[in-house]
Length: 120
Image (cartoon, rainbow, N blue to C red; front, side):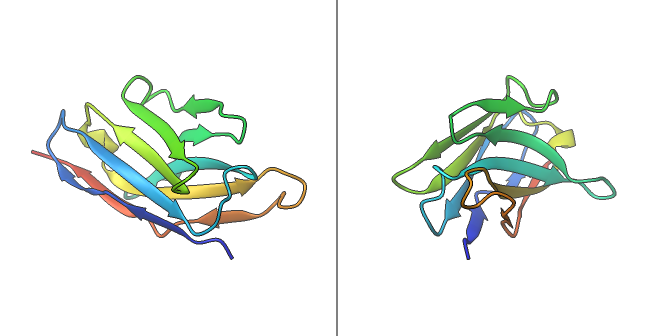
C-alpha cells in the first residue's frame, strides 16, 4: 500500500507563494502519473496540475503561469510551487498517484490533503 503524505500548506497573503510537498512511501514515479488536485468548500475536486511518468506536465487554465509541478525521484517527493496566489486558490490540496504501467494500471492513491488559505 503506497502512502502519500502532503505538507507545506498554510495561510498566505494574496500575491504570496507556497510550495507543497507530497512524499511517497515507495519509488512510484516510474509507474504512476502524479497529480495535484484541490477542493474548495462547496465545490467539486478539480485537477490543478499533473506530471506523467514520461515527464509531461499539464495545468488547469486557472493556474497556468503561476504553478509548477515537479518531482524528485531520489526523495520520492512531488512538489507544487505556487506563486502569485489568489483568494480563489483557497482549497484543500490533494496529491494523487494514478497507476499507468501494466502492473499497476487502475490503482489510485490519494494523500490526506493539506489546507491552503489565501487571505489578507
